[in-house]
Length: 200
Image (cartoon, one colour):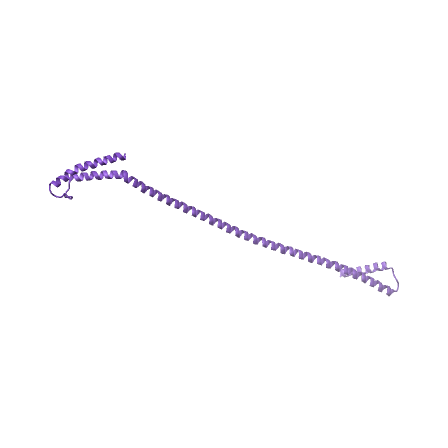
């Protein structure tokens, strides 16, 4: 097709040269230079034909590749812009995801700190309660020991008082009474004294 068009263009150029040469020859025969401002129908027609042919050839062989290159360039630019937009959206998404992860980690760390503080406070409270319970138990044991020692001391004093009372009474009445009987009498007497104190 390209060869056929070249052949046609060559034929048209030859025809133009053949047709235009009589006009130039007649102007040269008149003896003056050709007037370019003088309208000549033949030259105008051939100029129009050449322009149309040149336009057809350029639109077929030059404009199409040129427009295709421009469109390809525009398409490449649009693709690059779209790619940049996609990359920017992906980067923003990743940034938002990283911020969310960071916020989650910060919240988790704060929760761990709060849990640690609560655990430490609970351990402190438990230790204080345990220490208080141990102190109360020790106080109670000491109280029981004191009460036991007091009861033992009172019993010892009572026994000694009975012995002294019996010894004193036997000297007073100057007779040696039965020790067991005397003890029973004094214990009953002391019990009656305790009972009398209680009724008062």
